Length: 244
Image (cartoon, rainbow, N blue to C red; front, side, top):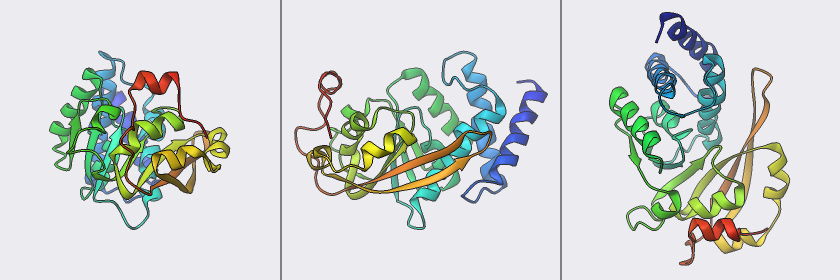
């Protein structure tokens, strides 16, 4: 990477981490810089992200992900499963070394990228599981083992809940990055909540710079054991998704 681009990334991270809702010391910023640098470099070889401008990456990927820690509040979970592409999970792992994080990613190139970043930064509290989230949910050592589960730009809400709620421990929380248009439906009482043994609990609202505007993290509480018939195979979910 040329020096100009590297400095653009560094300046953008420092600028926007000042607006971060979570503490970001020099080590955190440096580790996030390494991650961002790797993302831009590897994106030249593989299609990891459509966002390539350093400032947009700093806001749309890093700062946005940092808001997960704010949504979690003071009682941070001991464990986190992140479904898909590693964001916000890897940012949370970098920012808080006390959160043991499993990054669940089925795509080989993306999974290998995350492994490379973990090795390069030496993130001791993060690991990669190369598997589809609905398949990982059936693994005995993963099913209902995480205090929290999160996903961002992953899947439509009903599909995402079926794919990932089996990973969440009873009384744990699921954090879903939602658009404003989705909130009205998500807030409704519906049979999907009873079927999956989950409950709408709260919404954490925040605003991103660069005229991006309002964003929302929906907080879902796991109320009971995931029934033995969930999650279904992805093709069945796609053909006949759960309804509100």
